[in-house]
Amino acid sequence: MAKIKTRSGNKTLVATVASTKTGSERRDFLYIATGAAAAVGTGLAAWPFIDSMNPSADVLSVSTVEFDASLMQPGQRVTVKWRGIPIFIDYRTSAQIENARADDAAILKDPERDDERVQRTELLVVIGLCTHLGCIPLGQSRGDSLGEWGGWFCPCHGSHYDTSGRIRKGPAPKNLAIPPYTLLPNGKILIG
Ligand code: FES
Image 1: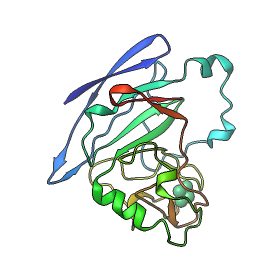
Image 2: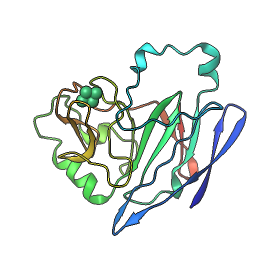
Image 3: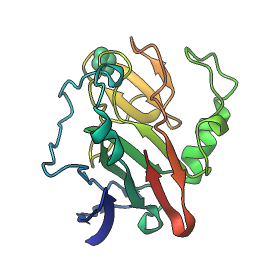
């Protein structure tokens, strides 16, 4: 178990990360709320589209989350809650990066190179909402289906995302979106 500090407005939140390890496969699961109440979604929960949420100015002013990714290991995935939205942080393995980059030239529904989707090669940060109807894709918890491309799988209507979060199969029209974030010194990520 590891403790992680986050900042929400003038509050400091401390969250505990529960680690599980099976062979080389690690899946860590963490939700950090930006408000007082943390709502933890499940795989099939429907979330509203981000564009329709229209948060008020006072909510926006306190809606950044700082996450210390220096505690992560290759193969770990963490979910951080930001403005009520799940943010997937994926510390990718070299194999996952190779797979993503090998498919840069593939026929993609929403063409983007892998290096256009990351600020640091191993750290993929995406909004964890399927771009079809807003379900939360599977892939963040141990034992989840990762889909045919080893990234995430949305079982609502069968969308498969690759290790760059790009849509590869199914009805979702777009890649998993990239939230605004800044990489800070010492491995921290400021989301928002
Ligand atoms: S909401 Fe993900 S496939 Fe429909």
